[in-house]
Every structure is written in C-alpha cells, then in structure tokens.
Length: 586
Ligand SMILES: [Zn+2]
Image 1 (cartoon, rainbow, N blue to C red):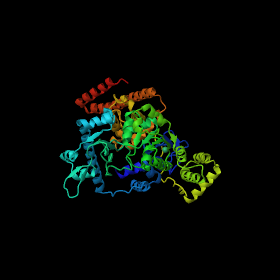
Image 2 (cartoon, rainbow, N blue to C red):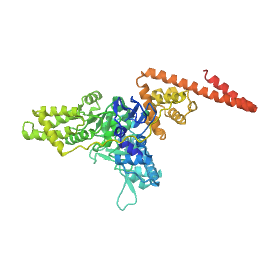
Image 3 (cartoon, rainbow, N blue to C red):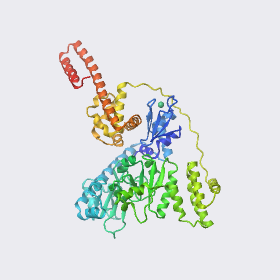
Image 4 (spheres, protein in one colour):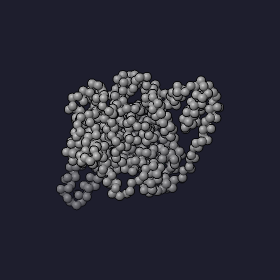
C-alpha cells in the first residue's frame, strides 16, 4: 500500500474537511457553503463513502490532499507530510525504495493468488475434504466458489512444491506466510496442512492471508491464521468485506460477528451485510472503514466476558465517529453459524438489536449486586466511564436518567459523579482552524457538449444498470480525453461497481467519483424508469451533438481539399460525410 493510500484509508474526508469548515449532514453526504467561491447557498459537498469532495457551483473537487493543498495554498508534498502526521503514517523515503516495495507487494499478491487457486482446486480433488465441507459444514457449491474456499492437503510440501515449480522462491513463500523453515534445514515446508482454507481478502477481493480450519476434531489448533505479512495487516483487514459491501449499502447496516465461519454461513443464508474482524480485537481503522459504508453498525459477539469487553471497546472507539452502534443479542446457546441455518430467525435477531449503551446498562446490571451500596458503586463506576465518553449531551442526559433509574437514585447524583470523573480526564481543546490561503475560484461556464458528456457518464457510473445506454456510443463521441477513457472502461467492465471502475482508472479515480456524486445528487430523486429515459435521451443528444461537431470539421476539411484541388481527398471526405448522414438523421 502506498503512503497516499494508507493516509486516505486512515483519514476520513469529512473529518479532514470538517476541521476547516463546518459541514452539515445532507443524506449520505455532507454540505457547506463553498470555501473556494463566493456563495450563500451550500453547493459544496463531501462524500465520506467515496472519499471525495466536490463543489457543484465552481466544479472544484478531489480528495483530501487536493482540499488541503487548495485551502492552505500548499504543495502536494507539504499536504502529504501534514496529513501523514495527522494519520500517524510515517512516510517512506522518496527513492527507489518505493518502487521496490511496490514490486514486492505485487509479487506477494501473485503468490497469494496462486496459492488460492491451488487450494481451491485441491478441494475439488479431495473427496474427504469436499464431503466435510458440503456435509458437515453445510457449504454449498456457490458459497465455496464465492469465498474461494479450498483445501490444504495433508502433506508437508504440497503447496511449496507447486509454487516452487511456478518459479516462486523460498524467501517469497516465507514472506507470504505460507511456508515455514526448520532451524538448520535448507528446505521449507507447508504451514497449512489438512485444513479447510478460507482466503482472507482485502476490500478489492485480493487474497492477503488465510484462515485454515481443521477437519478432524482432535487436531489443534482449531483455526490457524496467516501470520502478519507485508500484505496481511490484521488490524486493518475485515473478513468478507469485499463480498458484503453491496448488501451493507443496500441494507444500510453492517453486522460484525466473531468468526470467519459465521460470515460464510450467514452469506450463504442470504444475510450478506455480515463481516468479521479475523479473530482480533476491533481497531479504530476497521470501524472507520465500515462507517464510510453505513452509519448503522451492529455488534454480534459472544455473551461471554471477552464479548462484553469487545463491546465496551467498540463503544469507546465509536464516539469519534458518526455511527449508531448497537448490539445483536444471540438467543442463549446459539451462535450465528447455527442461526444462519434458519435465515428468517437470524434476520429477526439482527433486527431486534439494542443501542450499545442500553445493552451495556442491562448487561452490567447482571454482573453486580444492585441491592448493596458497594454493588451500586461498582456498577455506576463502570458505566459512568462509558457515559462520559458519549459525545452528544442529549444522549448523555438520557443515559444519566436511565442509570439513575437502575440505581433507584437521582440524575443529579449521577451528574455529580460524572463531573468528578471528568476532572481526572480533561478533554483536549479544539484548535481554531486557519482561513483559506488559496485564491477564490471564479466559476466558468462549460460548453454544453461537455456538460452532456458529464451527465451521461455520471448516470452510468452511479447506476450500473443504465449501461445499456452506452451501446450506441463510442469514445469518439466524447471530446474530453478523460471522458473517452472512462467510457471505454465502462464498456469493458459491464455492471462493475464504482470502486472497480475507479480502480481501473487510477489517474482519473477522483474525477470518476466526483462524476458519480453528481449522478447521485442530480438524479437520485428520479424514479428508476425516469432515470433510464433520461440517460437514453442524453446519450441520443450527445450522439447528435458529436455528429454535428464531426460534420462541421469534415465540411471545413472538404472546403480546404476542394480549394487545393485534391480530388482523392475530396472523394474520401465526401464518403465519410455521407456515411455520417446515414448513421444518424438529425
Ligand atoms: Zn465552489
């Protein structure tokens, strides 16, 4: 991952922009009067989900780097250093090191891809493992395919031999976390043996690690995870996210479960807004990543002490983010893996989730003896810490009252306890943000044809189901070189989502997202049928406008050729001109 990618992943665009200007929520996005042109209305928009900002008034827009550069009037390198500090990212030296690290990462991704394919193919060949997966784990063929589930043969050198034949070095095998080496030995051995293999993917669906589950109950440990590698950072990766994203957006919620296996069975049951943290404690990075997709985050942990601790930690982490955290309570004795066998019940259990603080109040009441003064003190000590962290005063007040009820005490007493605790932990003052140093941008009207091109692309980027509208268009119908690249890519990727399209166009990625944001803002309120009519009409008008342009150019060339008396060129141009007339009568 490059420095820029890492910084973008850690910093939320709303947080960065919001530290300079005041943003107001507007649906999934945030709005403000534009800091870069003079206006009273709010045409400046920030999309946390897409990681970009854009002004519909002056057309300025981009990522966090562009904003800081423009607002503070500084160069890219300065903005990079500033945001790197803010994100806690230490910048790599700007040298051949960068290129080397990038090459190493690409090589390791290739190794992981080969390993995924190898394990996946082994599962199909191994009758025992396949029977275990299908009969005991109740995995269906589509699930095995979607999650690329595989089997690591019961052999010390199955994978290592296969990969070495493909030209992968022993050093790379170890670096990828696939092989080990015994002291004093010159050869390496397979780290995963006789296990059902679940690839752990990054959010683009590329394998970065594995979880291996034993087949035989007596084998230990039950689950074996890849070690930390240059690709696999356990504090960042979210299991199942690449497959869950569409459902998370659609359902506007995400359910976090404990085990990777729970994710697989839940997806199989058709409940796909489910992910897991790969067996580690949740980090702020992971919560932030999820909060960009939805505000509604539901925790579904075991009801044991570890689960309670994880919930409290999540409440603490969630206070700095604009999210609604709630807890899904499992019926006693069941886990998501069992429940997924009964999808209707599993959906109900998820729907009945409780706000996290309510859960904590009820859950902790069972831990202490509230009939004694000591029990009450311990119970309130425990909760006051969490209540104090609540950022919203109204919410805080609500829980002060609820806690008072539970203790058969008064809200005043709780408030007093709250301010006592507050003295020991002061809140850092918020610094006054500097004014923008950049000069004001004067909005310039764009030619009508360019606007038409933008609208056609905006709709197609935002709504993949409209891409049939591009069938009669070619890149030549677009005059802007970026637009030509985008339409060419759209025609190649079929129904791929915005992120896939943006990933294919690294140099235009921000622009692509800005166009999609425009599509969302301008056409989001249309009924799907109207949107479809609109895009076909716009595409038709673009074709006409483009043909008109071409005709003007052709007739100019034709006149020049006639003046020069170049009969052959006149003939060629005339043929082209007539072909154009036949193609579209306008
Ligand atoms: Zn503006």
